Image 1 (cartoon, chains in turn yellow, red):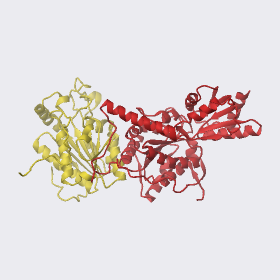
Image 2 (tube, chains in turn yellow, orange):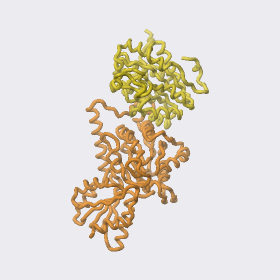
Image 3 (cartoon, one colour):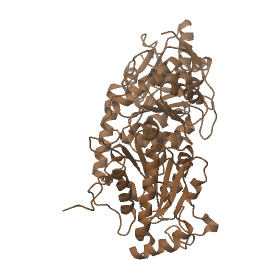
Image 4 (cartoon, chains in turn brown, purple):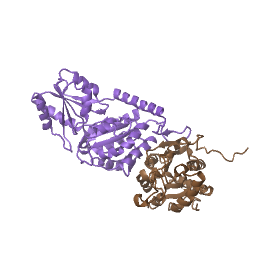
Length: 256
Length: 352
């Protein structure tokens, strides 16, 4: 019998600890499929964040380092600078990347460090139990803004992809979503591009992936998908925000 | 090899190169920025990596990534910068990564000043970051010793898979002295089979510090504790100066301050007074046994600890000597370096 669908080699056979309806499993799979397809697994080094995906190293079948909170881009810089032949990626959530690790990601992107960042934005701190993140939407309720995010008090949610795309240094920056099948297909294309640019030694690449967190949003899985579609996408529009000027990777110019 | 006249900070940079270090991540801070200014030119000559990071936080975490990817790495900073690096140092100690940190101490607390001090003794020897860990701490008293100990630091880091500090006061970074770089002192980095170098032909490697299972974390902590016991048993280094006559007064001082104490000792010797000095070269591990033996010697009548701090090493001397003999302390702070005459005056007060 012909096998037409199986676990990617770049994923282990470990059941994940993620909640039902969480997007991490899908995003892990997209990264793993990319590593398989591009033949990068054996020279890949992942860097795990602090947050729900802190245990990502249990699920990826490749070398991994586990970073301090927010410092994954500094870890990745260290790895890539001493071993440019390796394929290095960070996998970070919004608290990790956009709050405590904002300096590290901005400067890594600005230096044009040639690694890839998968930035999972679910608008909330997950592991600590649903606190306000820099990406929490206006009026969104979390445990540390129980009356809803008051932008006059704590500012507006940060659009990380736009912020990084404003840097002069060439980079690949895209925002995708993992909530509906056609979005997942687009997300897969963006992640593949990001790794391909790195493999070509071209530029820093970051793919922001909008993700659901039914547990901390207090919603069912299907309601969470609806909520993402109606609330997150209008504020965090999808698409490629920045591509490296010299597009030397064949077939990457078509849109997502 | 011929001697060269070099500034301490630059000599430390060259020593790292001679010790086969090929990656340096840094952030500028007085009084040691010359390490960076030296290495930005020198590293490319040996195909090494030089990178000025956006902060000490980032530089030290880059060190983690690079060391865990198998490279021999180091950074240098000064007191407030080292405080920022404490996060990464705790993680590096936990992950057992060979790394070297040079701290050219300036005066604090807070922004303090840029002049020499020894106020980071406790930070360096007792663990500046969180959790149960120790770093090996080496304290040079001259530019030559800064070179020798920097090389030694890389060897010790590799042997014990642990962060090693070279802890110098501001004078060590800024003064110029003749130095010689001995050849073949440090071996190139060995294979690091645990490093994250890509999993071709092997199972994936993981470098982490998270242990959610308390039993597993206790096992890990005990493993680290056993390593620190081994370090304490094998790596204690100190210098004895004018101790053969079993002097009544014994001084304890490290770094540049020990040289000032030696000047005071030589001055008093000419006048017929014998004073001894024990200079710890390793601050962790501390020469407890040597100091206990001196305290137990009936010839010893008192101990004088001299530091450019408010008395930090003093606590270790008190512990080592178990208060068997009276201990006095003389310290200058704020970037003021004690003059030999001041030390002589303290010694004369003790004798009177």
